Image (cartoon, rainbow, N blue to C red; front, top):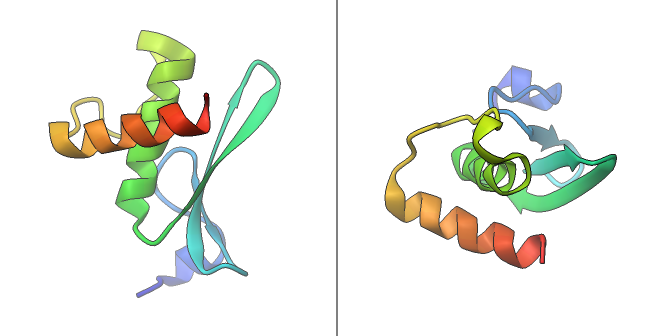
Length: 87
């Protein structure tokens, strides 16, 4: 189910936006003048966790996170996913 605010590109998670053409959530993050496209996801929550993992890796302890204390199994999955993307 896609809400009206998502169709306009607005999602409540940092780094996550609705991609109208692909009908999936896109994750992007900027660091040192470069934009990293981290992928497309069906679930906005999972997309937000991928953003958090990338923010932790790129920005360190001062990163603005969606979930500062995310559940460990999902956090581990997101960190593994990001390590492949940013390698």
